[in-house]
Structures are given as structure tokens and as C-alpha cells.
Length: 401
Ligand SMILES: NC(=O)c1ccc[n+]([C@@H]2O[C@H](COP(=O)([O-])OP(=O)(O)OC[C@H]3O[C@@H](n4cnc5c(N)ncnc54)[C@H](OP(=O)(O)O)[C@@H]3O)[C@@H](O)[C@H]2O)c1
Image 1 (cartoon, rainbow, N blue to C red):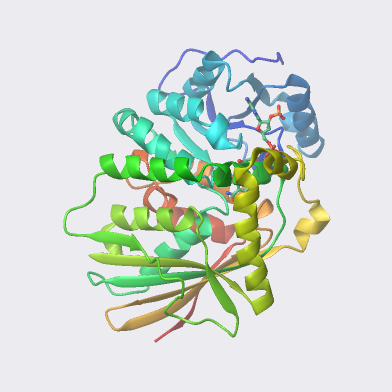
Image 2 (image 1 turned 60 degrees about the horizontal axis):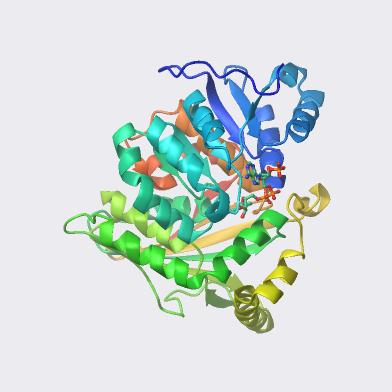
């Protein structure tokens, strides 16, 4: 097998069903392992990256468990080499990328997939990146038929599909209010740390990208969807404390609500983290403030980046102890429902599963006709929930009333 496997001429039947870009990193490695176990023999997939030795080591690791993967193709792709990125986009039906921080490395692949009509999934939790990609590449992807689906990991699948699942338990055609309460026990990788610091170090850029998006994004007539800005939720769950969680998730949920009539004429969503102790809530609030301040200043930012290097992440033993649950409280048309989405290690094991299943879902399932930048709920909805449930993630109605 040559290092840069020959990519044949582009055709309706692309050379590969799925190309995974970033398999030499921490989350990409887990995603490769998930695909090795679950993609099945009919899926033609390949690994892409910039470092041949590292890619061969990933392939050797996979082949030790699945000897048939000794022949897995390895493709050269470096975000600094436009031709290599174009070639990958043209050779695949679906591209998975775990190459982050996405603000720094992500755009060439989104642009190439939008041009080539190639479906794309990533793990970004960076709102600036999602908004900039919408402004610059959504229309092109609409024209080519590419589905550009960001945030296919813990950001934002449990929240996006959990809100979608909750809405389906409520009456149709009426205003709906949903609140999501996240509880989790996890750890973070070097890649996640670097991406988070990237978000906090450029808050003006984040607001600018959000504004630019608003000026070009079309809204459906006669329906609206908003993020609830209330610091306190309407609902209470358990005896703990809640804090608003200003992640990319609520924006994704409201975009699904704008895309799908089922969310009703007036949809609001509030997103909170739930903790048992007041001391934890206070520590999180001050910790977030300190992180934003430290990320904004170059010397402290450099120190933060040294906390964990690229490629590092929690061990399998640690991940086995991690878990998450998101409780949703939905109200509308005189009905109230409590639902839950839950699973294991949120940041990595479950994220790799969600990302790989999203790619397989785009590849294999009978889905609504969408294109351009689309959310997981709008692009894959029920089909992806079915896959995730089969893969061990819980979606359940806790109570109705
Ligand atoms: N939202 C979520 O739920 C969630 C969960 C987990 C991770 N993430 C995100 O996923 C991303 C990856 O995280 P991670 O911990 O897996 O990071 P990581 O271990 O540092 O891996 C980064 C990968 O990107 C590759 N890469 C970097 N620059 C490149 C370039 N110019 N061209 C080609 N490849 C390049 C690296 O290749 P080399 O090996 O050659 O250096 C490596 O494969 C981060 O943005 C993180 O925030 C999100």
C-alpha cells in the first residue's frame, strides 16, 4: 500500500464511502477504532492525515484487532496543502474530521466539501467557526448538495437530538418551551483545551461572526425560535443548583427549531448545567470567568495551552468511570414532559460513537432531503436517534403530565 493512495477520478460513485481526517489525534483515534468495529465490510473507508508514520501506527493498531484492515488506505491530507484537501473531498462520499481547533484548521475542508458536494461531519464546539462557515460556504453547499453537519459529538448531539425527542412528546402547532439540564463527569483532551482557549481568547470575533450570520441567514415566515437568556430556568430538577451554559448547543437547538415545523410557531430553549452543591456552582462560575480572563492575555494563554498537549487525553480506565445525562423539561399546549438522554464518557468514547454513527447515518440511511449547513436534528433526526440507541445511548421519557 503506497503512502498517498491514488485517488481516482471523481465520479458519482466515489472511491471511498468515508474518509476519516485526524485519526492520528486522540478523538480521531477513538473514532477510527469505532469504525473498525462497526462500519461493516461493505463500507469502503480510509484514513487521512499529514504524518505517514503516525497514520501507519493507527492502521497497525486497528489491524491488530481486525486483520482485514491491514489494507486500509492512507491518504495524504494537510490543511496547509489545498490540493490534498480538495483530493480528499473529491474522493469521499462522507468526510469525518477531528482536526481542530477548527477555527484554525477547519475551513479548507468545509470549503472543499461544499464545492465537491461531499457530506461532512465534525466535532466542533466553536460557535465562531460554525457561523463563519455558514456565511462563507452554506450557499455553495446548498447548490452542490453537500450536507455540512457541525457539532456531531457531545457538542451538540445529546442536546440537539434530546430537544428534538422532547418536542416529539409535546402537542403540535403550539408554542413550546424546552429546558435542558446537563450533568456530566468527564475530563478533557489537549485538543479540547486548545479549542476552548481559542473560543475564549477571541470573544469579539465570536460576536462578530454571530452578527454576520444574522445578516444573511433566512428565517422561516410565521415561526420563531429563541434561546432563553434567563439565568434561572423555569423548571427545577432535583435539589441541586443550575447555571446557564453558554456553549454552542442552544444555538444549534434553535437552528433545528427554525428548520423543522414540528417545533411549532414559537419555540424557546434554555440550556443549563446542573450540579448538586452550591460550592461547585460557585467554583464553576468563577472558574469560567478566570479562564476567559486568562485566555484573553497572551502570557497566561501560553501557560494554559501547556496544561495538556495535542494528542493527550484521558486513559481508557478514567473514561470508563465517566458519564453524562441531560434532562429535558418540555412544556406547551397544556402538556409537560420530562425526558433524558444519557450515556458513558461524554467527551471521547461517546463522542467518537456519535461522530462515526453520524457519518454512517448520512451514508446509509433514508433521510430527509437537506443540503447546506444543517443540524443533526434536521439532517438525521429519528434515524440517528435509532442508531445511537442501538449503540447504547439512552433516549427516554421520564414522565409526562
Ligand atoms: N465537541 C465535542 O464534543 C468534542 C469532543 C472531543 C473533541 N472535540 C474537538 O475535536 C478536536 C480534536 O480534539 P483531539 O483531542 O482529538 O485533538 P488532538 O489529539 O490534538 O488531534 C488533532 C488532530 O489534528 C491533526 N492536525 C492538526 N493540524 C493539522 C494540519 N494542519 N493538517 C492535518 N492534520 C492536522 C493532528 O495530526 P498530527 O497527529 O499529525 O499532529 C491530529 O490528528 C478539537 O477541536 C476538540 O475540541 C470536540
